[in-house]
Length: 107
Image (cartoon, rainbow, N blue to C red; front, side):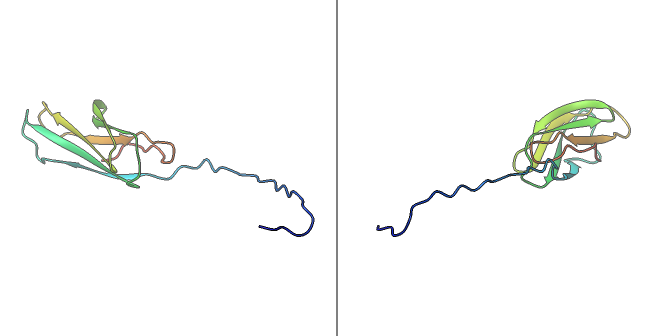
């Protein structure tokens, strides 16, 4: 390769601004059985949007923690046995990751 003309170095300054806003996360929560049989195992599944979300989801019955599951492929599932009678208030909370905001409990 032949270069003609004068040689010079061009230095360009680059400034990058990172936006600290996280993507909003939404989800649906379903139970493998409704109604559930007392003492029988069920699976609670939270499906997140965006499906690229990673991290963990904590599942609750009211304010009692049932357990935490890892998000894989946009879903988190937890097998539980509910040893209570009557209605349950099942909720889950996505804890967020580096790109997706944590969410308030949902039903």
